Image 1 (cartoon, rainbow, N blue to C red):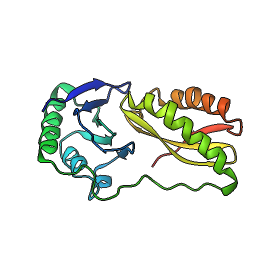
Image 2 (cartoon, rainbow, N blue to C red):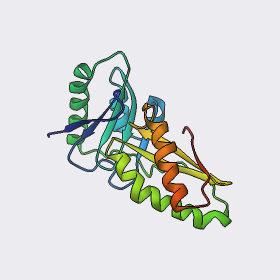
Image 3 (cartoon, rainbow, N blue to C red):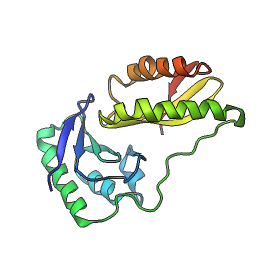
Length: 187
């Protein structure tokens, strides 16, 4: 099995492309710590078992790994590649059961606005961010404020706040006049 790697804007995160589906759909799952993966993903558990793996993000066709600051990719990358190859060759499912994203509350009167926001995020923002090894998850909308979570390589990336405020917020405000601002929330 050949797994390609790509750099991301976050120097602590590397994107691994196994050349096959990972989550099998457009859903993404971000594990910010080892305990979050327990019982939800054997793949994420195996990656967290490696020394110096701090975050695991599962995209539709890639895995982003964030490492500890004091370790080099030259040391960690071969170990991650081996763990990924072993897991994918096992044929086990990546996710256990139906692992759903966090639920969010939307007022019934905001349903149309939220539909437009989610459509823009799904068609314009998420594909671009996935190219950098991350994702942006919609978490809610209230009183003109859109709540989003940066995931994968985007979580902790030095340029993520600028992307969120200057890129995503400006685009949403342009196409959805009801949007006043965008705020980042942590999972």
